[in-house]
Image (tube, rainbow, N blue to C red; front, side, top):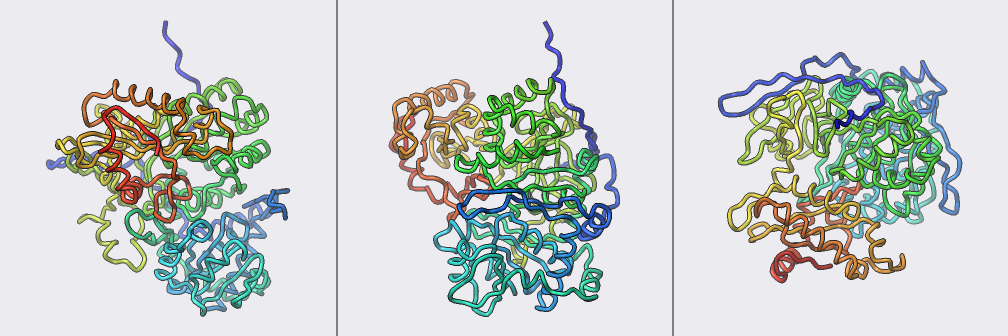
Length: 619
């Protein structure tokens, strides 16, 4: 009996074939078989276009913040309003003499005020930098915020809320730097209200400043998350951003078939939320509804509430968010019906998506629609704008990446047992701000950006299926026996085996005899123990039922191994959450393997030295 192929909601793919050139040394060059089509030279051209064509359409919306901390009705910023506020605030920035050497620093979550100020900066050619809110609100030492301030020397620092960001401002912002607030007051230093900037009368100087901008004008700085070193400021130009949006459109034609609607929490200080998603909204005249939820237990309810009300046309999230949504859709008919009513594509990034989550999403989709929704994914980074590689078909498996975007050249370079992918194209950053050594180190002799990502072919006999992820070059290591351990595929295997109780795995064993893994668990692990919700995580992980479950997982991993390089001999369940101060986790919840290993080195050695093989224990 033959099973029929799954049916998917129709979605066209723009890049389905590539050209390849291979050199005698084994280096391969890849590019799409279609050229990059013309694109605007600056993102403000799109704001002007949509403000003229669809002035009343919502550009960005966010629920009102209520005094008790809850959220109320949606507040909307239309394209016409966005242009008006951008002109007025842009004039205020001109009046202050701001520039690339004195840019605007934004301390804010995703918000209407954040959106308005960013547009104003874009309009008059003043670069801005959205900083991770956690560097101000979670960090205890403010070291990363202080590093960013020292690197950029901003002429203006904006914060949405004095209560939320006041301590960080007092501790780090120089006394002679202007501070602008949307809400609240600072008791110990002068400050300006955002309303004053919004009420500035614009003059022809705004048009003059806008006309002076072009593809090489810096639009923003986005800082990398940092691992063993401090974050680096990635230069983003208008041309880089516009080229990348055109590349996205040609790979994903669905973006331009109707004005996109997004319900999105991904932070704008990251390239996924701030370039990819807010960019596609502005580029195609869509509407972005800011989701104040997040894929953590305390905030996931807000995400589900928003998705019951607003029907997205494309939906972006990280695997932990998609897992929570998949679980909720099984019993929440309103959520399932509304979320699936208009969506043409789901898209994940940031980590591997475990197969059980994939299967659960497809089951709900087939139940509601009689067909599946395409799951898109690919590969990119802050330095590539971020879009670089995208899957060319609906039959996607975890780890698949796909084909290069139009206008890009990929260079595949053998690096020992791995193959590194390198990027060249109009969407690639010119470098890191005020760090010429880091910029020089990031590009090879032919001008290709060295990503550090390893790839392999999905099918070497059919290159048009594209590439799949093969880990990070820097993460891979050798055991004491000289055996090479490929971290990426092994990590994905562990997460899949431990689903739905494993959020991420950090692979250990450098210069040791065996491979181990330290596990960050999901909130669902508490269901295994059956203990009260208030029980400390350490007690949950030490519960006999939890230990028995993970011992079974460990035994299964060992039984399916083919050698010491992929045989997990020991597991450690981590009760201490990843630290943002130490760079162990990003705003999106992605785990930085190198940082975790660096800062928990003593734990790793104790873990390997005190346990017998094929054993686990809680931290």
